[in-house]
Length: 269
Image (cartoon, rainbow, N blue to C red; front, top):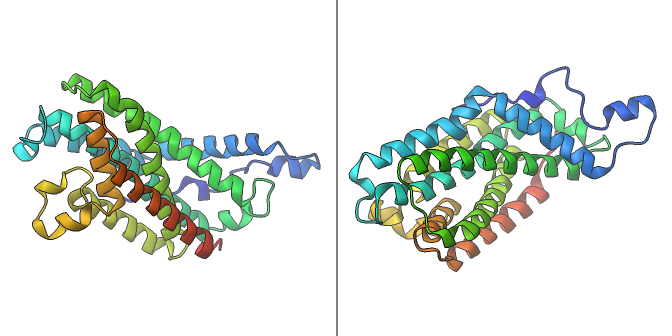
């Protein structure tokens, strides 16, 4: 489940570099962000290992949950209970693991330090990464939704609006956590930490498997994890059409704390 950051490969011309080389004024900030976001998106989609993490594994997990009795009794059907957790897993895969690894190796190869001196700047770089996460997450939602509908998924129509909003909030929380890890430890450690947490949170973090089906030892703490909060909030939205305000507050708290910590301790070189 490792990922090789394409943004560190040679031959890449960063947004604004060509303008600077020609002596002309840089493009507007919004255009620079869009160009960086486009580049980050293409890099993620071209990375085979990232696609496995972002698309293939969630689809396999969804298929597995529909043919096992693990989720029986939690909803009207296995697929209805499984899909919200799979969507949450997609957000964690792209925003935390994928973005964390990519940023960590960008930092190692000096890409982040270089970008901080270009017209794109630090704000533009972070905004570009967030934009890429949202684009890839949108593609994940489309793929998972299409597959789930073929398997008989019947979400509550009232759950779509809060569900999509929760996915964006969850992506923000996991992106902040991914940047915090990538900006404070060595790239090799980032690779190990993000992959290990992906496995642990996916299996025991309440993101795919509801807390009531987890060992009693972890049930109490799962609701306070971003994985458990996002998984349960999406299940409440798509199964009942309701908004879990407690889970929303947990996600907001993680976003604020991780974002603040990343801003304070992120190392650009």
